Amino acid sequence: MVASLKVLPALLLLFCQSLYADPRRGDTDWLETMAFAAHQTDYSGTFVYQDGVGGTVEVSRITHILDADGEHQRLESLNGVRREIVSNNNQVWLVYGEHKIRLDRPQGEKGFPDLLPEQLSSLKENYSIKQAEEDRVAGFHVHAIVFQPKDNLRYAHKMWADSSSGLLLKAVVLDERSRIIEQYAFTELTLGAKVDHSWIGKNPLPMPSAFPQGNAVKPAADLKPSEWQVDALPSGFKKIVEFCRPIRDKNIPVTHMVFSDGLAGISVFIEDVAGREFPNLGLSSQGAIQVYNRISGDKLITVVGEVPPRTVIQVAESVRYAGE
Image 1 (cartoon, rainbow, N blue to C red):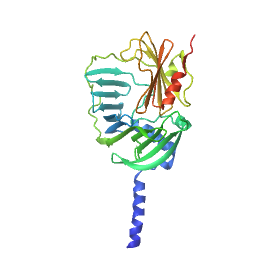
Image 2: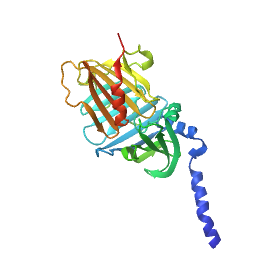
Image 3: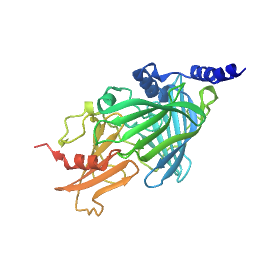
Image 4: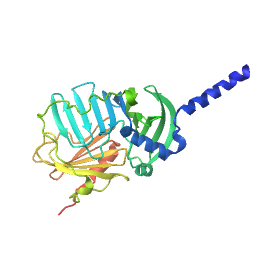
């Protein structure tokens, strides 16, 4: 009897391990599963965003469906002013309060739980990727993966994915001292056939809107070479999109370039000073997002990125006009 009791824990361990997919079958295979899971899985749940530095907490509900008509997603903010983003394939609407605006689908922009790129080669060039512990998130068994940067110009990332579907359930951004500066985590989640489909195809609010509709944005590959150049981007950052148009309440066109290394993004904004005063030049931050503003001649250069402060400063100081 004693001998059989000693064997029982080992048998239970083997049984439990057999219930879950084994991501160690190959890091590349598992990363690809994680990258595509946010697009190929039906899920609905509530997740919490926490700014580990400033204490900001935001709660959101997300629902994602893949059916014969394509991909559908609904993201609702559950605190603060009503905010809702509904997408049906390439059609995207933003509801803010009582207003609605038709949006362009952002090029290269990602949000939880869709954080991993489909092309993983650049990640391996700039991050050391290793398996970490097993755990439970929102009642699901998860495996963790750590993305450790190979330089000091980007943050480390740690992600916990559902061991069965590969869907990302928790993600944190870590500074150079391994302190959490930003975190996303599901608190409750439903997968598969039980997810509600009834909202698909319904307009959140009737048109017309008090907001103007978005303008078309061309990918970087379709644009002529820019007259503005960024000389000191960290290795691995590639231009995703570039455009020039008024932004928000500004009537003056703003040049906007977006760069990404697959995990982190950096945006560069260039606009005319036009006699305006800018009292908040320099560095500011919110969670993992750093913002740096400087005046260069008659231009205001703003760099925003989910990267360390030294990186946005380095990038902003290297922006120059390369035209004639």
